[in-house]
Image 1 (tube, rainbow, N blue to C red):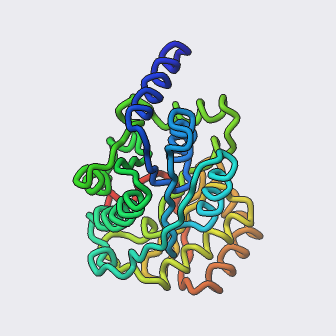
Image 2 (image 1 turned 45 degrees about the horizontal axis):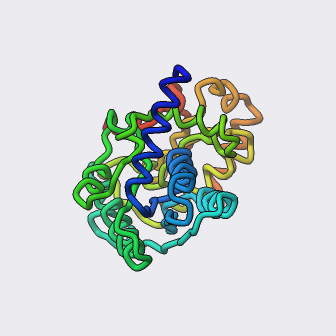
Length: 269
């Protein structure tokens, strides 16, 4: 992105954020919401509030990162316990699962924000998110959640470049969607399956796979890793170790996706 174009986008974003007067940001701890919180702090100072959802479906590493970043940025931070798994529509895991999930979370965030005297809530979607199947965006629109990064014309690539220039840690973090996204549509979401995914991905991370997904097909683990690392899991020593670890967790079959990781892959089904 050209320097002048980037400066124009940043200026537009800061003007927009300042126009809100005060703002609560749905802060997952991912790259998008981290950049948004940092810019909101710059535009609004004490007028920004970061709110993070906590439940078994959300990676704990992201929660810890969100806490650390809020502290580093000097932003007020609230952590809300959410109970997505108590919603039968969410557990059914139809293609509109994310709609029910986001509606549940945003209802809690909006309520918490209003209790703090803040009437505007934002989430960190970018232009890239509009190109994929994202039912959660519909829930946000219905509830009046604003999307300033979209309005200012930011892509995920823009965010990472700006975070790096701003000296913000986490600019190179891989995407980290909720664990429910690892369970194919039509397969019921349970706490047990979520736990298996969480433990399996932690095991892979400990083996050096920075970017990895474990899709839980009712007892069959299908592993996706960065395409540049596809040869590593099939090495004999690695293969044995991965299979052993995942079977301990409860998977009956362990398979490797030869395409490697690709965002939104389960939307094919």
